[in-house]
Image (cartoon, rainbow, N blue to C red):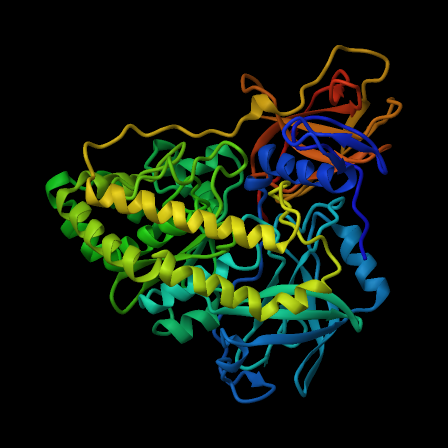
Length: 590
């Protein structure tokens, strides 16, 4: 079992291992190692976790005559009613190599076993931003790549298998609930089910077994070929392009657009100029022509349905919600239309996310515009009477058929009962890392059910009586609520410098001068001057002297500084900041 780390408490208090304290909202003793872990996980999100870049993979080109281990039919592997059992054998030295390389996620050789099939020399790495933090202690996700070391090898026709940890808002249940509804609505989405993982013959817990969106997915869902792009937000500035909003900067920096929309198929363009054409149509088409132009440009029926499903499920971390994140764009060469492909749907069915995103009250089912920077595609749909009316008709039907509590609550129970016994022996905490109030999976299920009931009641009332369009509430990360540097003293870190820099990672090092510290905070500002510093990377633990920034833009410029956090009776207090350094990130090598 992996121990819980020393970290920060979610409401700003601080303590060390094996201390109990009383919380102000419960007035009960809480064992601090878990509670402080929760705060640090939230801290990672607040100070930049949402903008950590995912390391690029080689573009996927459909291969002819791929060497399959068995019949190239993965249907049985993704049967929703099945709980798969997967074994991974990874040599101890390679496990250490994977962890020591973080935040970079490197592949190591492993042996994969499922049923009576054993495949040696596959590639395995950690997957996802939450699993990339070197000091986090919760369950890490895995990506298994069968053709990493043998380009012609597949498993059941699949090139990759993803095992998601299910530690966020929707736990292990959100992904299956949402994708099941999408499939029933004939919307292209990943298949998934549960899987029990055994790592070196030791039970490693329950995971969500999620189909990857890649060239195999395209072959199964669409015609062969077509451009596939994955959105990849590097920083706050990147959201302007990722939410499909037109800015003059996009026309002057195709390289930057190519960084935001990463080419994921051989037909995709490294500069994403076809995505730029899509953004231009979304933003610059005259109002009178918008519905017809969009009908010819985008699979509008599927997108309107997806808008409704994301809203009713509370999947806010999408283009259609609070953050232009977690989606792919695919251009079908046959229909010449774009398809929006949502992914990473593990953040659903939770209200007041991060304590400041009002998922239910801030996301009106009749006027579905939400977020700090709503996508112009969603805004113009709501502004267009024909498209808005069409959306509402679809949303009304979807709400009753799929999200009525009488329909959805039994599905939640069914999923939980399917893995209830397996969860009992899961070696990791039976809690969501994003929800410190959890005490067990029973709490998680109760919370999800409560969301479903309240979301249905609110959405039903809103669709029955839309009223006038409400004002958009701008939801922004509460950077002010996090830790702050203190006054300068001899305890301030010194000698901050860069030890290595590439187009995707900047690694920093400094001298630790503080005593009794419990964490370090790296702050970052964009550009050489002018922009304010914000908390960017949280590093829990004493005597920390390094950190890696994996959310940099190739060719970008940043300023960095660092400070320590120490426990006090009034909560964590920051030391003064270190020296400030300016880093020019190299461009990608073509």
